[in-house]
Length: 140
Image (cartoon, rainbow, N blue to C red; front, side, top):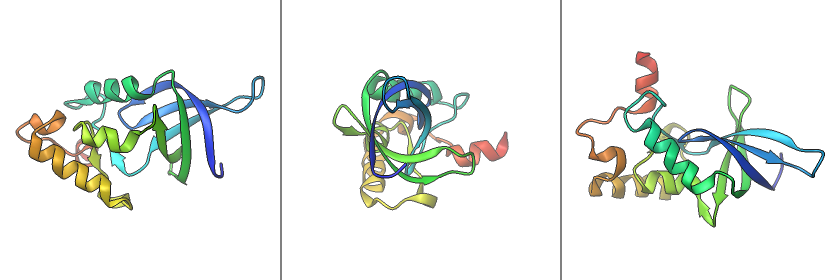
């Protein structure tokens, strides 16, 4: 995928992964997209279902501008995704529904949004000791 694709979001897996239908009628491709630069709680983790719901409220059944930045080790498209005029990665972090994924972070605004969400105690930051998804996955 090169450039920006306009696709219909047809599924939300969790707070940082969605499925989009891209292409022309009769020639659609289903694309699994991992939101770039963030890591959301896993489904069974605290705030996992709320994070998924937040992404769903923003993107499900919406047209999305998808700008691929990489491919992950599972073959998913890693992309910045815009739904309803908002950057989904930034919105998830702003709402306290995801961490800035510092290992892959290139946009300093994402980290600033996380700092602000932490300070405001919104979303997962209302928890006394939220566990980063990458650490939670190691323990599973």
